[in-house]
Length: 326
Image (cartoon, rainbow, N blue to C red; front, top):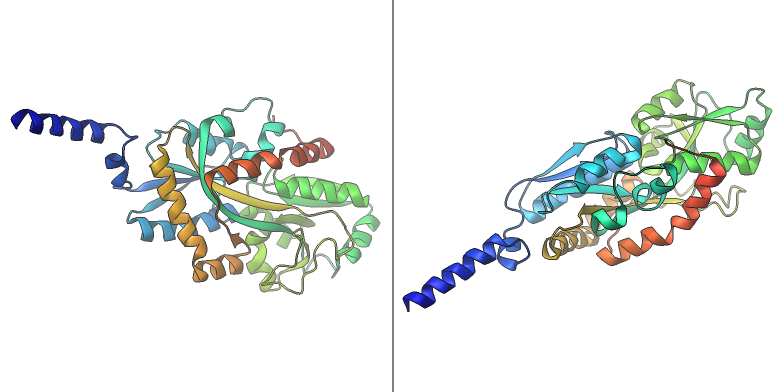
């Protein structure tokens, strides 16, 4: 009897010591969880991640502490997560840039999205929106803006949250296709781009919709077109690029929450399950729509598949734009 009790105790201790077993993961999370946002505050990734982290905290019973670690197209923040302990207490909000773009911008990458991370689920998707300052640009339609921009002797400028981001690539492709003399002006994020546009220092942007909904609704900026396949539900009067006269210009940004690659699958599954519950909540869905995004959910495997499936398109876009981040 004593021997059996001793063996049972040893088995329990071994289970608790091994992160791959259910006893250890059943307690996750038993302390605050860190969510690294690899971009500055106030941008779409930051805003939407904070909504999800608030909901995750309620469902999982622990605080999700948001930490902004911007720089190098998100590479700095992502590198911090890649090198973190794979114990479920460090995550990142990885975007399409990390899944499908950065590897074509940088000659050297400190991490590999396929080797160093495991996604829990896709989290959201949003289109970009072509916007101008209501005070400094007279155009009220995309066609009017194109004509106005072509007539300017020194061309126009367009802002983005950094070299190689979808707003940068969208702006470059737009100018190239329509024959506009456009100069790219990179910022650290929408929090810097928006004031520059409102002051007249930058002419326009094709940036993430989520960052611009408030200033568009306030009337300080004018939205000319969205880059989604359909009109945005909360801005039904804004045409798509195709409706505005620019066909084959469907570009969406999306994200997934990822952890270091060796994070035990039961922890990943618990995070994924919580995100699935959040995505199914009607109030959260509406909150995302009002913020300019659609809340998503997927399996971890589907997130990987989507990232790989879009790489050729973005590799071509990087080549056309001539973007380099080294």
